[in-house]
Amino acid sequence: MNEQQFEIVRLDSEHLAAARGLFAQITADPTAEFFHPHPFSPVVAEDIANRMGADEYILLLVDGKPEGYGILRGWDEGYDIPSLGIYVTPAMRGTSAARFLMNSLHDLAASHGAEKIRLTVHPNNQAAFHLYSKFGYVFDRDENGQLIGFLDLNR
Image 1 (cartoon, one colour):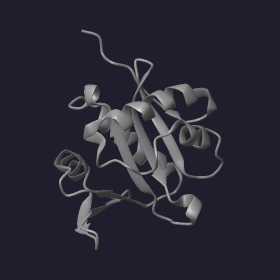
Image 2 (cartoon, rainbow, N blue to C red; image 1 turned 180 degrees about the vertical axis):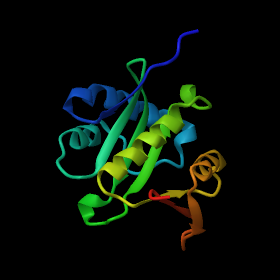
Image 3 (tube, one colour; image 1 turned 120 degrees about the vertical axis):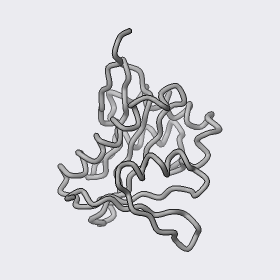
């Protein structure tokens, strides 16, 4: 059996078509109900691909096909601690794809000088909660009932 080839690329104009296809898949995926960092329209994909700034938007390519999406944002608004978000297609769940994407985002945050990362997760999204817990995120509940997790990148 062949090992799958994972690759991380920035969502830029070169990868716009792949991002639009993945965004359409996210929109159609009922299991993505808890992942809503922004609208997943073709216009938003183009805006992200052509944007300037410190925030990071990346695609996970598996054997050249877009199978995941990752975000580190907040720097453009002046925050020191970026907010992380990920999506992995149903076909890639249960593989090492999510772990690869998370590790890539952690490395990217560290390369920006971040000492911590934050994320939010809905309490009903147990799969995501367990994944983030395995990475060492420590959680509190916010006023809206969401779980807010922080990871210290220096540990």
